[in-house]
Image (cartoon, rainbow, N blue to C red; front, top):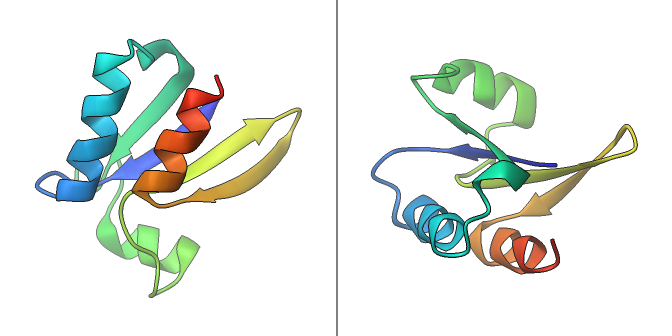
Length: 80
C-alpha cells in the first residue's frame, strides 16, 4: 500500500492524482489531504519543516519507506 499526503491546488499533487486516476490505481493508494485529513502544523511536526507535497510512503510488511516527490511516487505506482 502506498500512502500519499497531498495539498489541494498543488500542481505536483495534481500530477500524481491524475496518474492514479488514469491508471485506475485508487485501490493501491491511501490519499490524505492537508487541512482535510490532517493539519499542516501536524504534518510539519511529524515530517519536518522541509517536507513538501506530495509526500509518498510505501508500506510493506510493516516497514514504511519514504518514496519521495511526484516523479518518485509515479515511478513507484508503475511498479504496482
